[in-house]
Length: 147
Image (tube, rainbow, N blue to C red; front, side, top):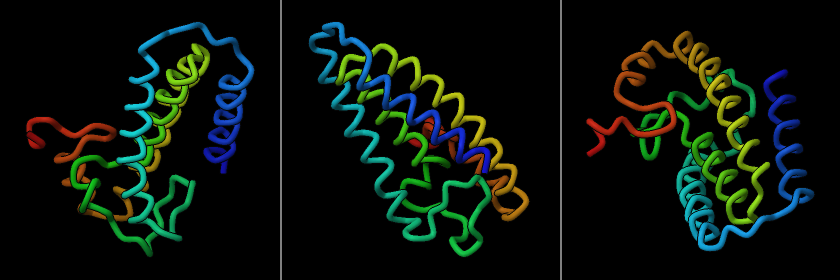
């Protein structure tokens, strides 16, 4: 439950940074932010659909879901985290919020720690998870097998 509480606090602070901090003019970088948001949605939405109503914010796996290894999960072990991170960086750039970028980095560290904890549970729950880890990247595809 601590993971969920910390995650909620980080997102509240991030939201505050987007709304309340000054916005320097970054010009064309806004388009880059929009592309990151689109990329984040492209990764996160199929993963959300794959989990359906069985999605949980806890790092413990939901055994009713089984191990997801198809679709976007065939290339990335945590596409929802990657999508969320792309989305947070994209929003910070789009709205020209330097503190949003700083907090996106903090969220990156948080989701890396949470993913490590989640993977510990997944290895215990699914013996095939170790082989799956060898062929997929945590947040980005393993390029040698992807291209």
